[in-house]
Length: 138
Picture (cartoon, helix red, strand yellow):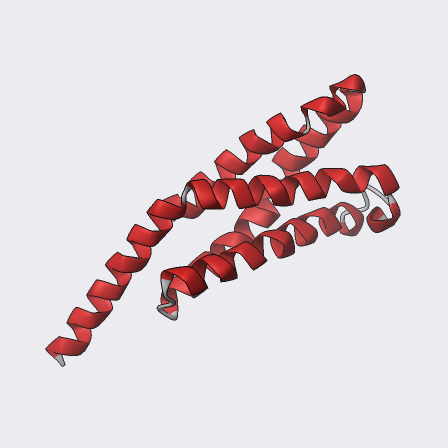
């Protein structure tokens, strides 16, 4: 549970850094960070589910990282769609310039995922060892 949460927290920090050019319009930057803190939990939840699913089916490290890499844009898209579902914004996918913010969130998620790649690899190998030991015991 700690690895997906750490990836999420790092991604929020990286997102704040990646979107700093939006400080040209400070209100937009603050609203963007507010939305990330408010709606990012949806992305964290989806990513965490994918993380534990990949752990449960005992994927190799490369396959697991590929699956998690694909889950990042899915989680961000779901989170971004929640702006429309909860009636904060109308038709969020035609927002033009504002679509750069979810793109920055995806990039931040990927950077954070690959920064924590070693922890994911250790978690994968620990799970593989315990699975192998369980098979050998039977």
